[in-house]
Amino acid sequence: NVGVYDGKYLLIASMLFAIQIYCDFAGYSTIAIGAAEVMGFQLMDNFNCPYLSQSVAEFWRRWHISLSSWFKDYLYIPLGGNRKGKVRKYINIMIVFLVSGLWHGANWSYVIWGGLNGIYQVIGAVFTPFRNKIREKLHLKKNFFPLMIIYIVVTFVLVDFTWIFFRADTVQHAFAVIQSIFNMNNPALLANGALYDMGLSRPNFIVLGVSLLILLTADICKYRGIKIRSMILNSNIVVRWIVVITGILGILVFGIWGSGYSATNFIYFQF
Image 1 (cartoon, rainbow, N blue to C red):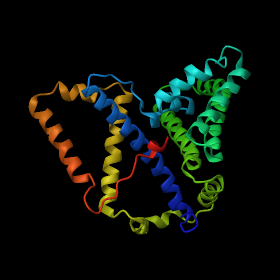
Image 2: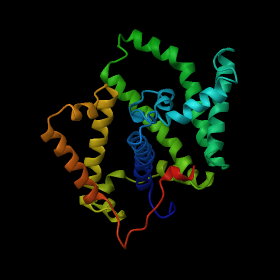
Image 3: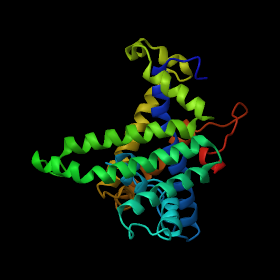
Image 4: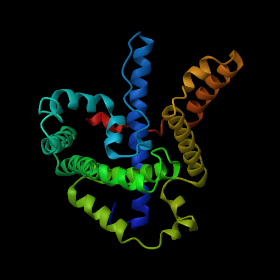
């Protein structure tokens, strides 16, 4: 209910939606991959640490890899890809992302979402040479950690902004959220505990924080090529059983079911 809550609440909601849709979609993709592997089928990895991307272009190489690959093979390359000059390349990128928006739904909010991601990539491609020259003049290496963090944060902010249009029911709804965020009152007011009145108690927020830390750690390990699964499988039987038991207990403790539970579909199930 956008009209009821101040922009600071909507800002936090938009940031957490970015996490929610990642956990939702990557979660059920992982379930599908695991279920297939049990039956002897190997499916492609559908997500590869997307929120550690240092550009929007890199984000889309790491997010929903199966769909991105499909659009590349059956739309981008047949349109000419990058073989017919830069201008045509940028046009092709915009076509792909506008079609991607329509693929999610015949709604202007999806079209804007796709269009913004396309525009980000075109602007990024145009200014990459200038960005590289500035970095060289400042004698900064490409893997300079503070610079990488800046790129990651900026990319997340840009992508998260587009998620507002993806999540909103209408374009007007999305602009109302954006306007409220830019006109929000003092964000420090959330320190008074008002956030705990939104439906999640303080213990639940602690669980959320710990869970996000685990997710971030797992993604960083994957990003750096550390294979957690192989490490577990190569450990002694005591460690393996501790991991398995902890996982089962986690499902039992944090899973929600019973007479008071109303099951809902995954967010991406509608697509």
